Length: 406
Image 1 (cartoon, helix red, strand yellow):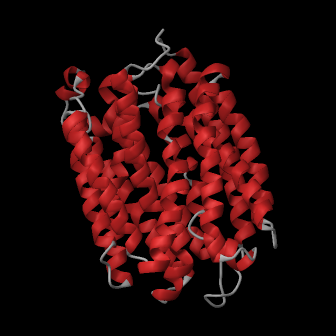
Image 2 (cartoon, helix red, strand yellow):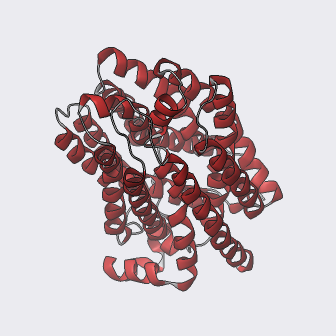
């Protein structure tokens, strides 16, 4: 059993983590910019929720369209194609003059960006054995934390100094660097091309993968994983500023401290999930997440230090869920279906997240752009319900993977 990463494997993990960093940052930057966009573009919370969900809906659609072709090409070429489209969409966000143009730009960004994660996870499953995937997923998903530590504070600084377009332009700049490494250093990934999927048409391959009984369990579980983030995140900065009284100028420090702790927590939790069992880690993370979400969304006032501590704990529990679930579900598909499975799974997750973000915009209310959000605690209970259902679904995934031959 392989225990240590080779030099090339370390490069692949680093590259995929950096790609995820840019994609995650592109989505997450809307949350801290929420308070600015509500004012600058004169939009209501429901309209802002639509901007967030537009990315998710288009990402979900592109994932389904790409699923039939996902196992018919070199994964390196697919990754480069979709990443180039993502950079172009982000560039459009960086020049958007109006709300409608920004909405259009988010659709374009989602069409390409939504497929990148599924390709990345297929590459992980191709190149790393299951016994190492907890560690790999823990390292790759430090992108979420890195976007908090590096991306969000810098993005907020650029937004307050040069306007809300500046963070998107920054993402374009660093993304171009990642594209160079894909072209120059990433080797072709073609082991799956000789598998049975190449004998079927793209539509047939999509249908066969989407309707296979064993895969349906995994699809159902991953659909609900995005609910928490997509419901709470779009209005996170507004809740902190308007409800809890945290000054907008203090948000960069909050994001930085939370993200710094998550950078260390992700790899440790990934290694721990390989040691104690991936489902056990998922269950522990889910219980802690549910408790903290109810506590957090029910707050009416809190000090900055308390909010930072609560956010650190919440992010750690969410990381435990995401790392362990990603590693566990990666063991479901066969090699011949891996790309299609990951694409469909990502698509369903994005679509359910889009519904969640849109629903969040309907649940919360704000009388004026500077008044407190109402109904945020209701979102917390919806998230808890999703967490509970997902625990049961993921247990079925665990049982199926345990019976599957190595």
